[in-house]
Image: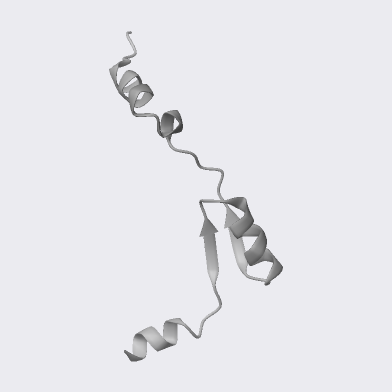
Length: 59
């Protein structure tokens, strides 16, 4: 338990891969944070993902 307590005494360093408002809130609290512009492939659409998997590059 002592190692966990030590972890929570350190400053936060955050990578946010979600809503930008989470990033904004952390920045407003002077938390060291980086915003990643990440989105699921094909917007997470299962049908589009299936179509992308079928594509092949012919050489």
